[in-house]
Image (tube, rainbow, N blue to C red; front, side, top):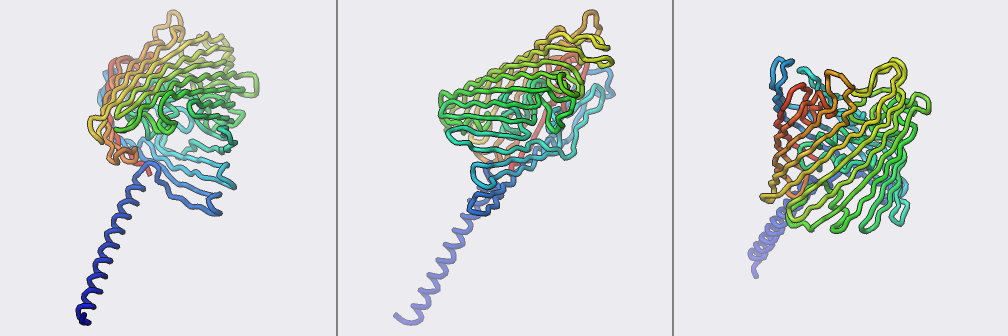
Length: 449
């Protein structure tokens, strides 16, 4: 073979190899971009063979909202605009060994870090706290044989809707019922146990909605006990932890859950239950005993999902103290005992994929306050029911992932906000109003990184 032909073959082979390597690099780049675009993608820095690790993640939720309410006290019945609903940064990993872990999350954009939703007053005002706040900060320990421990600040194991992450909700946000009864975050100690089809969580804490409080805070209870059990009759726990949505071609999943909570206050320095239940002010040094129960069912399969929950809370009033004005419906100030009150709520929702990346959903949730919230002869009521209807659509820009998702929904509130216990909240679309009905259209773009 001539030298010219040999050189030609060598050049051709080199060109082919270069092209193949370039194509391979492009494919790897695309794969890497897809990995970064998935829910599980994180920036990882490890030392010491994986015993020490730091994972950095977060998410962003940007919304446009349009609300209409019929209220004679307002200058204009319409309100609209953009909001940075949530911006979160989190850090997690292991220290010393893979059995010891940590999770820290800080956030901007709403008041969930301190246990209350962003307010929306009875006039034209609607305020949200955009400061930096600590949400989660806890240490975990894998004890082996299915046992685990968590200590720090975290969500108590009560309402499942609250336990499902912000980015994995079916609608734009959680239900109004959840916002009224939510456990929020607390500081305490939790033990857990998990097996193939059953798991249990039990916590000893400062009480409901007591994030970022000191042990002498009047918002805290003397003690609080929370326990939750879940039984899965079909599927895998990863389907329970992955939110409400079920992608197409996924296997059937079924789970029932139940939880109990009890807390008492007023017997130690400066303690009470200022933030525990619907309608409570933020710092009432009162002696209340609170207990609640909830039960829920989650089923989902090949591109469809359904969820239902019931929650009941009972407040046994004590002595609010001289000069303290109790929350709505609990009597007169000056030390009068508050009555016992029994409130409950329900949530029903479901969704179905009509295409690989498009999902339709609907939800109805209702709140039923105790009639004793309205004192005898009072011209103002505080025990009206609240029913919310929600319909919408999800577009999963990143297929089979919540990493990039667009959601649009319509909420229709059938009842008055000001005469019940549903908290006014720009986050949940319900604004303060003494008239009914009102409705809100919300569009949200979500990005998880």
